[in-house]
Amino acid sequence: MKNGATIKNAEVAVYVGEYFVNNGNGALLNNHGGGIIKINGAHFLNNQKDIVMQPYELWSTVTHKAIPQRSYI
Image 1 (spheres, one colour):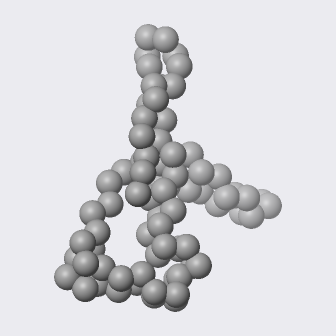
Image 2 (cartoon, one colour):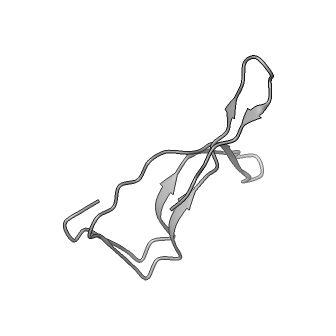
């Protein structure tokens, strides 16, 4: 987003990740996250949430443990 772009009146203006909705009970299942957002000179106005970034986990195929990563805004 750049050059004065505006997102307004949204429940979530920018969502980084992937989700599936289970139609059986309406549960929101988050199973992917991470990514890169480039924002320069944009505006977020009157949103319930401006940015939601789900955590990213990278798993080692050797140790079968999560490798620490960083997510920040």
